[in-house]
Image (cartoon, one colour):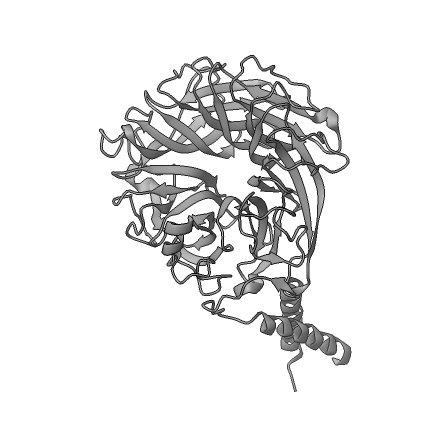
Length: 552
């Protein structure tokens, strides 16, 4: 009755469909496998985290202490102000650990970190020190200057340079194209920021704007192999007539730069845009730049992202297909969400998010995926208080992770959470808690939230840095005031003042279709039913089994 080759194709297709969709509905569970404080006797904050291909962990941030407990410092602290630190941690072999401080006579703040396949480490941030141990001829200027430094595999300083003009410049984000090939983004208030002839914008948009009163974003490529020279193949301003700040940068496999931040310029440069106007006082922006193209051609996509409130994009990443993923905070009641969103409106319970932001300073997390210059997935997520997404990552299966801070006791939590209460004993409104969420953009509606958990203790906690390691475990860093969180073993069990920390969470399974705790969203209208996909998976596998059993 049936042509056997075609039924064989159908059989294998049925198996494929079943195996692809069924695991999404197997409830997952999570466990905290490691937690250690990182710090000394004073205060610390961890801002960014990454790992190498041997699962060494690298954390950068700020410290006011004379070294860290559990580490022997490579570079001894010589000043009393806030300085930068880099810690390398190997959970299997402590002899691989190192601790490095980048210090001058002023204050430093480290914001972003990356490591190449040769185990060199690259860090950016900003400084008020005119006497940093720089290796290049680039001079310090202004109240704050951005900087970059590179550590070799032994944790020794190989390269360091100021980045900026004669006024204030901040380095916020960093991405690697290869060994010694670094892109930095941030904000500049200088009208003499160093740019290149192939820049999208060589000069500040209106020359008298970059005079200390308004800022433009910048994107700069730096060659750190030229140890004694500041060498750049691409450097540009990006912005309009008002204030523009870039907070994060990623680079995809095609070498395209993904840059994001916020703007209140009504003439921010737009190309193939999603939104063509500034809707609030501040909107987020996302721009894609091809640094191999000259001048105006290098900006291949650029758009506002926001609603009638304020949006701030804090982090961006990209996947192997060049898609963009963004997170931050929104106070808009019309933020652009997709039909398959977890929630299409702000979670205040009020009719108008704008009224809430005026009266209660409310904002929600947003998570947005952009594919081919269009929004493919976009959702708001939060409780009745205030939330901010600080970091974002995408795993190999396409699940999206966001970490940050919330002061909502009713923040949506899944049953597989490692902690389902905010601050344990204190109301969240008194002491904000850190959180971790995981969203599958291919699963519609509330079922797409496959993991959500509080992460902190009974004091203030904030998850600022996030990374997915080679084992698909979630690595986190940030700032905590909560005692008694460290696991055994840990590098440091002592909590003094505010501490940086290292936290590792293992999530096994990719679904949480059953028993999810969250507030219903009457405005959310999923485009497909998770239940239909579940039964499709079961029936596909059953049909394939019967075909194998009874086929002649």
